[in-house]
Length: 134
Image (cartoon, rainbow, N blue to C red; front, top):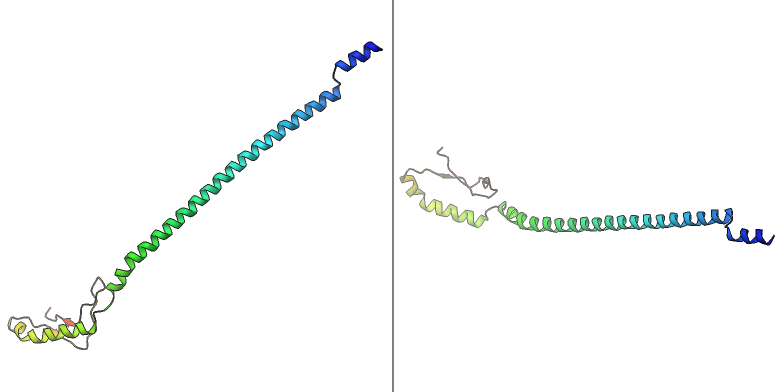
């Protein structure tokens, strides 16, 4: 019986081999799961970086739009303002003072004090002197 015992102890049992195989399989699965987790984390990090880049781009574009709006809206707003009444009165006085000379030269421009200010194609008020000779 001694010989059988010695032979039995040197050869691994089927159950022990099966246990080691299961352990090796579990380790491989754990390693694969860790590798998958690392890949997913890397993908998540990349997606987060892209999201931050996109948000930064939105901030840059928004700042540029605000800057352009400030640059271009003010001249546009000021161009639509009317000519001050004092300036219109001064122009009318200058026109009245020189109207005889223009009439002699054949330029019969008329002025209408009650006419509203005329706005040209650029949105600028041009005054109340109207050429009716056409």
